[in-house]
Length: 504
Image 1 (cartoon, rainbow, N blue to C red):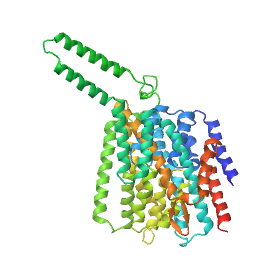
Image 2: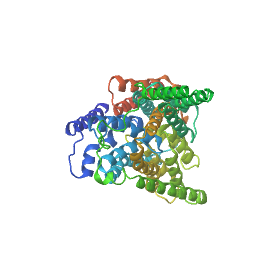
Image 3: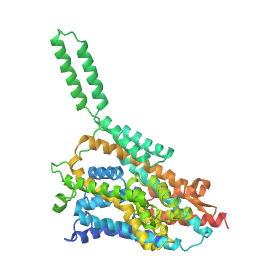
């Protein structure tokens, strides 16, 4: 089975590279051309958002050359700085830039719907099982979780190699990872990323050095003899020359990447349709209007949530997941405890079903936010609302805020992306967000083990075998080019081997 799946994914990847080596258009119809280039991604992109970013970089930067390295890193930082599903916003944004808004929206549906349907099917299956699952199933799920953690750990290491450009970003990656492990709250992760962006602004623009030099210059001028005008003039010239020299000197580590490619054309690294260039991605007025409509809708939904909570399960689920989709920053480290608080705490989904679905959907390709589809279908159980309606509610509520906000910021971004302060800020956000990926590894490690007695999730460290599976996934991907789908299958098999040896 593992050999067959590996052969299939290899065939898809190699076939795409032979047919579309540089992302050349194969159809004049944008939607058909988009499908030709991206149809396989929702079925082969395993490992969650961290791995997705690696896949997108290889395809859209290295193979298709739709955007350059600088633009990709800017988009990555922007996706991390905004709430919602990071990798989903990335593939949506790239397609909007290349084809236009409507084709980009279809690309989002192509990317997210296949596994959303699978998550709905999973919810139907779980709703019909008993309280206890067979022992081998728990072992298989623990093996899946162990392999997934190894895949995410590998992607975190690979992302950090791109995020670390100097000593400061190395420190920010370290602080992001360690600080995220030490504390967990809804407000905490956005504050960490804002702090990272602020630090790089101060550092790259040399605000402290410049302020200190000006203070020293003013102090010197104040204590100089008033009659010695020639000396004052000499001090001013010397200070001005020193400041200019300081601003002119910058090491290779401190230089920011240019906002555009080496040519003078502002859009030289992007393939933007004329229709899009005049609306979504270029008009800051349209961007502000989109953002204003989002915040107005958010306020209305939250007011209704406060006034009518408990009167309709469908609206309650929608309002809670819409709120979650709005305030989820940092992806994996936050989404698990947040969804547990908003779905499990009210008693709509049991803790066992929550973790059971989490273990399986983590092994799905495509966006991990499809987990909300699974929860939405289960949360309406026992009410007149059909499960399929709950799944649709979950899908719209969790994805809409992130896509909505990202669309608005794309219009504003075209006006501010060249500002040095903005680029400096994104450099810090990027590094801190990569550090939070290591936090996701830790938190998933701590809830990855399942059995009949630990249905609430336990640490994979309770048995060395799960750590061995994690290490096998990590080393296999790093040194032996084992694909994420194959690593997940190997993890499941090793979980069953553990059960056969230890429990039988």
